[in-house]
Length: 167
Image 1 (cartoon, one colour):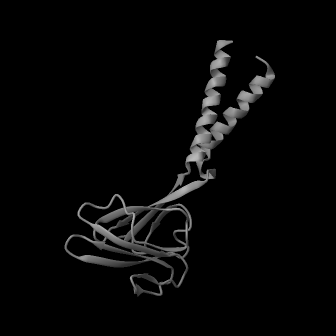
Image 2: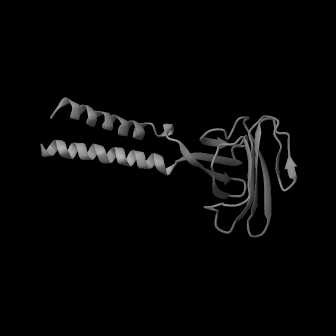
Image 3: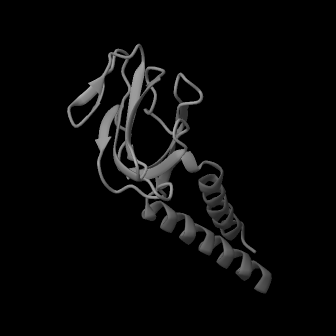
């Protein structure tokens, strides 16, 4: 086998393994937020296209605890933040804050939680200042084109290996 073919296979293998080993370098198409309110044993998820320092979500909730209805979720990352849903708010919090509005089939719970300033600005798990309160987990979901590039790279590596075995 010529050194040119070996070099080409080596390059494709390196690029494919790099994409697998460093998925954080891939562009995120969206972000999955998973919220757990430990004060009322409720959880839910939603997607956002960017990691904003502040935001309010009022629809598109999934994986909601059976029997619950999530009306809204609001977060604010800067220190001295106010959090509000529907004009009802609380603050300023020393750090960031979050509030959820959940109907459990009997009562509506609008609960405010303080967080460390700068929370929610990157992927990871954030726990409210009261550990028995709220946990927010943010995961990057890669965009489909990144997965297509990874798949085609693996396809070419497999093809190269197959050719090598045939010769």
